[in-house]
Length: 289
Ligand code: GLY
Image 1 (cartoon, protein in one colour):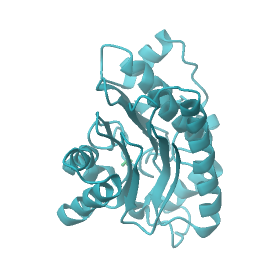
Image 2 (cartoon, rainbow, N blue to C red):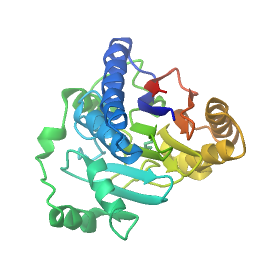
Image 3 (cartoon, helix red, strand yellow):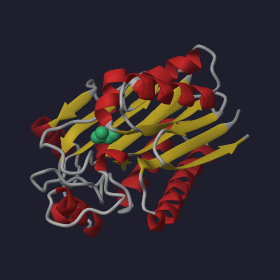
């Protein structure tokens, strides 16, 4: 049985000096997940650990390093799903928490699918999650991005925000052929407070079933309108190889909406796929027979 993990660190117009460190961050996160798979751990544990590593890396727009809302706040979203049980956990509009994906995992283990705002915060407290100061999540780079978006600093060529998507995610298949997907994000720079994108919405920014696991990055509104993650899973279920399924789902995104972004796929045989319609997507893939 082939075990495999794919992670992404976002897609878009990524400044050249950030590409190398972004790719290195993706490789490091994929290795964290692969170590779990190699020890016989579950795909669910592997994708959670990989996404936590990406959330802890200030390079990415998730957890530490999340972008700011128009009010200068940080509101994060995350979702996780296990394919063979169809168990889902998601949280939206989470503040002052370093690892929203860990809270989403806790929701997955509860009778619920999604928690938001005050209820999610209470659930986090009840389950022993420690909240941090806003400043611990804030990076200089995101402060600058926000100031440019607010017109307080001159824009840079790669600062076309609709073409910069820093969401992170992971998909994996374990030694039992079980699949899982996880996605986490700070959202879109200068977003309206309360705006929720595709990342915590099952079937839109992530999905896993018995055939495939998918995580997306991109302009969330279009991924929601077209339920891109579920479409990619259905393409695999209908017999398309993982790579062709990734390409077909992104083709739907381009044909039916003006949205930009990318996605990663793994199937139960450990075949991987990735595709994007932006200049670049940061990702890493590891497989072991
Ligand atoms: N894809 C992340 C978002 O739109 O919030």
